[in-house]
Length: 70
Image (cartoon, rainbow, N blue to C red):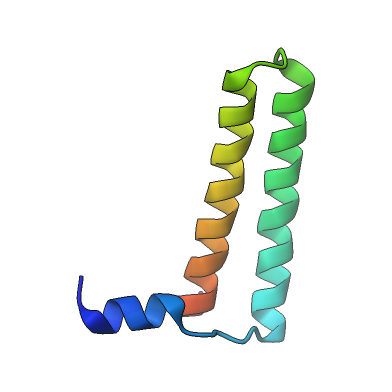
């Protein structure tokens, strides 16, 4: 990792219309999976972990869209 990589990570990346649609698609899929986990598992720490992993996956995917435009 370089200094430029770190700067790129923390730089503001404004969204365009195409990216906004992709963010929404990913967030919706993440919400659906999190709800399936909530509905299908007992309320224990593993449930919390699973939902947090979904949240982190959504955040990482949206960061990739913001940084690299795909």
